[in-house]
Amino acid sequence: MTGQRLKIGIIGVQPGRSWAARAHIPALRALSDTFDIVGIANSTAASGQAAAAEIGVAKAFDGVADLIVAPEVDIVTVAVKVPPHFEIVKAAIEAGKHVYCEWPLGNGLAEAREMASLAKAKGVMGVVGTQARVAPEIEYLKHLIADGFVGEVLSITLVARGGSALGGGSIPDRKTYGYLLDRANGATLLTIPVGHTLAALRDVVGNLAEVSAVMATRRPTATAVDTGEMLPVSAPDEVLVSGVLASGAPISIHYRGGAPRDDDGLFWEIHGTEGDIRVSGSSGHTQMVRLSLMGAREGETEFRALEVPARHRPGWPEDVEAGNVARLYTRMAEDFRHGTRTAPSFEDAVEVHRVIEAIESAAESGRRVVLT
Image (cartoon, rainbow, N blue to C red):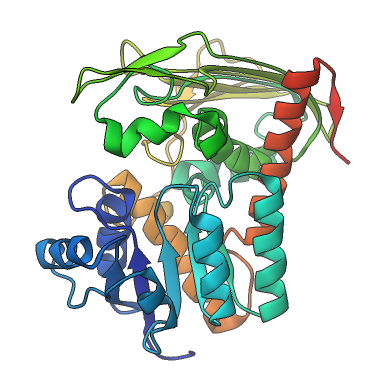
């Protein structure tokens, strides 16, 4: 595929509300010299046709299976709810397609491992949408830490909110968001915002070596605003993790369900021997919000803004969601062109799933879990 546009088929486009419509479509259109959206598919032909007409995509496939086997599709983008990820990704890999699958990759570690193994055996590229890893603020933060701004990292503290639909006591509508309430569906406060942030955190300060955890469901019911129904909740709305990084630095993470009362939804401090850096944002969904960096070094009594250099921002969509997705697609294209591995891979996703499983195990057993 060197020297030609990569042809994308997108599964799961609902105009005006789905992640594919909000982020993937504008990202790919901003990269039209590199990618060509050849068609979309939804759960029904009628839904796909309506979505294609509304967003201006030329073709709607009759169904997911038709898109997957279409010879004109090089890459299958999977942007649907978590439960069907495994079957769709597996079918795409077996058809010889490269895959961009949104995070979480699978409903649990076992599914993620199998998808990674299948992609490797088939020789296709598997990319996972952990977009916080390519956010300009995270890339610059990684540079600052590697360059010694804080010296040796002594500890990490992170407190964040997961947004109104995750543990906030209500959801906008049952059809779209109801599945988030059931832990068995694999889309929770832990797996989505915590997972995205863990993926970025690992890039910045390294892997976790040990974890202890507490998870609780403090709001056992949630109201569906559209219908007024009171629905049961089994997904956690409080996630507390304490642990140790491979470097020996202790780390504490506390994610709370619901939206913040103001725009302060993320506090992430990296404390070191020579300085400190604070990362803030309006939400703990680090992949979806503009982040800001503040820092102070020895002898300074106030934190100062650490502006992300202009080289990290030009040429991308201004919208944070579309911009981060565009950055990830660009890495994917570069990997195609040069045989590199810069885009978050299925193997990378497996490592994040391993940490999530360890957190779940620690919470359930009340014991510290060592990640080998």
